[in-house]
Image 1: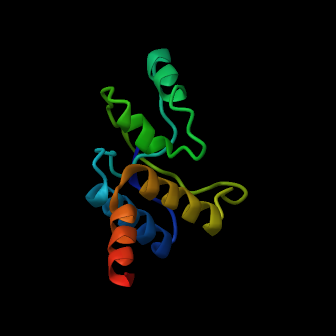
Image 2 (image 1 turned 45 degrees about the vertical axis):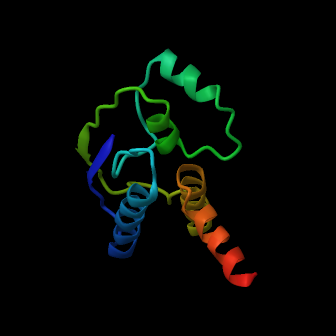
Image 3 (image 1 turned 90 degrees about the vertical axis):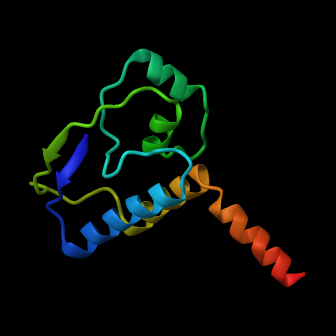
Length: 119
């Protein structure tokens, strides 16, 4: 599912949009923009994803990386009716970190550059 409009506060919207664009820029895997974890997939796709045995899976990236065709369905996301999101800022940062470290060589390039500068 691809969220067309988010019913969240302005800062959160900016953070999500910025992160997805940043990850898209640094990743070698084409991860669909503004996609969520909720999706419908065949057993074949699920089985392929499970063979990866990831410790910290970034589902949006794994789904793209296994290489099957994806079709996004746009929808207008309603505001939360009850309760609060289970995603705290700490959890969101962890998910972002998992996505960046799993689907980009940029962190390794930065570390290598820092090693060269230090030595």
